[in-house]
Length: 223
Image (cartoon, rainbow, N blue to C red; front, side, top):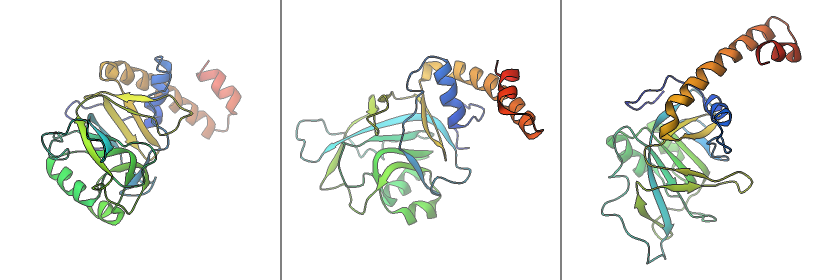
C-alpha cells in the first residue's frame, strides 16, 4: 500500500467505514461514486493511505475567489493524497497525465477527484493511483481553475449521502472498493476498532468456510 510516514496497518476502505460507523460518524467517512480508474478500473490491489492535501476548484468565470500563488500540483506535499473538489455539473477534466507526471515527482501518493479526469492511458502507464467520479476528453483551462489550497473542502458526489468534509491532514484510505476519510484526530480509535472487527470477521469467515450457516455464525461471533 502507498503510505505516509504515519503508517496505519493496512485495513480496507470497507473495514475503515465499518469502524467509523461504530464510532458514531454518520457518513462513515465514505465518499460514494468515486472509483479507482488507474492503474486499473475498480480492480487489483491498489491501496492508498495518507494525509489529505486539499484543492478546491471553481469555474474559470469566477473572478472573485482567490488565486493560489503557485500551481496546485507544484504545492503538493511529499507523501500526501491530493483531494480535488470540482463544481457540480461540469464536463471538463481537472486532472490529466501531465498532472500525474508532476505529482509523482513531488512524491504524492495518489489523487481523489470529486469530478472528472482524462488521459487514462497515460495514467495507467504511470501506474499512479487515480480515483474520480467520471472521465472527460476536455481539459480544465477554459472551464475551471484552482482557488484555495490546503483548506477544508466538501465532497458530495451523491446527494442521497451526507456530504463529507475533508480537512488538510485527514487520512484518506482508498482502494478498489472506494474512498473513505478518517478525521485526523480519530486515527488511533479507528485503527483499534478495525483490529477488533476484522478479528471477528476472520472468525466468521473460517466458520462459513467450514460449512456453518450465516445466522448461527453471526450469533456466535458477532453477538
